[in-house]
Picture: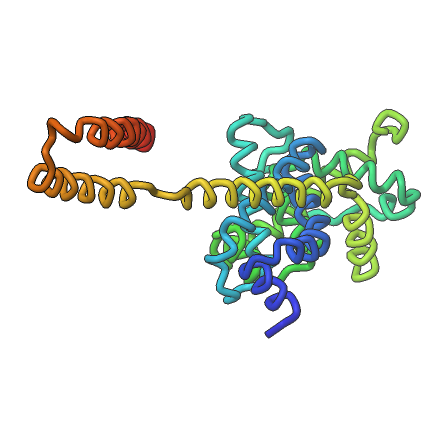
Length: 185
Length: 103
């Protein structure tokens, strides 16, 4: 039994304080995923709290067949998408706007702080499904199979969508870089 | 290409920093949920007095039969008065408790 699995068993047996170990380990990733979809700190914070509450309530149904992080990601992804549906938020960039593009070298020459702000702007323009897929690939470094498990998409669909997401991100970033940086930030 | 991807990974990892008190807030909610659960369990386990009153009622019926069979009601009015003055409030209490449980 892995260390994480033994912590989960301890929580199931009533040691609530052990749950804090799991919260500390996974909250950063859940918050980042929620932020990549919602782009609003308060909403992302609320969703992250709900994710851990729901996971706690459903802990008895978690048998350990998949990773605990995948279990959390699935709740987080669904919760964030549900919140978006409720808010009916629309996005600037259409999912159909695809061109096989790579990110312009200029982007990598900016200072880190500027890069972060440009990337944040670009992510806000993406469809949430694409921005979340990019988070899974670049930040979480999940395998395709894990992404399939979380999003309930087919494997081929995940591959296609990730490819599209990368191209759209590159397009949006390159468009942003064409403008004057001072206007952007 | 790999270097660019790695750099992109680094920027992504620094893009969304969680608020400082997030973990604390989550645990507060978990503890609140747990307290609520415990309160509900305690409420459910409240003592049920029904059996006590059933036994009391049986005892009452038996004692009335015995009383009627062996004692002279007219000459033992005081004892019967004491008996009913204890029993009637107990019966009212039983009925009120039962009504509360139903509500």
